[in-house]
Length: 159
Image (cartoon, rainbow, N blue to C red):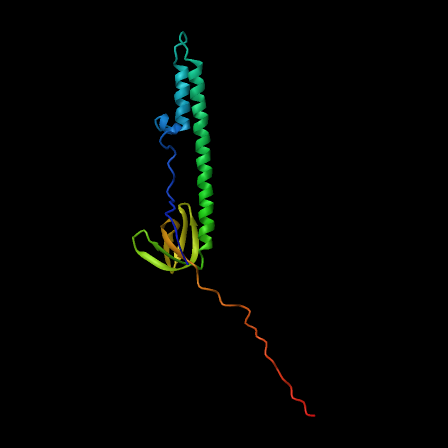
């Protein structure tokens, strides 16, 4: 049976998506935002202080940005764990994939190596990144380990 694998990227996910707080804030991180907020407070005109509503809005944006970044980090770790489990489960299976040089490799997964970029499969001495696997086929059926057979013996008796 053939099971196609979708392209599971191992590239880092961008921290700001369109419409997120990072995009709204011009792509600056939470540290940059905090520095900007502090500078704004230090240099405001004491005779015309800033609106407290604006301050609360900016503070809530900072909290939302931090929570989004923490969620993204947790999600990336979870994806990495799922990839590691899936890659370990491929040992002994036949896979097809492409090397970084563009060479198509087809063979049995002998081992899996875990890197910071994601799992790397060893297919007949050639390394294929987990995200570059295009097809997985079940490995060869293992021989039956219980090969004992009963033999019928007959004894002849002289009467």
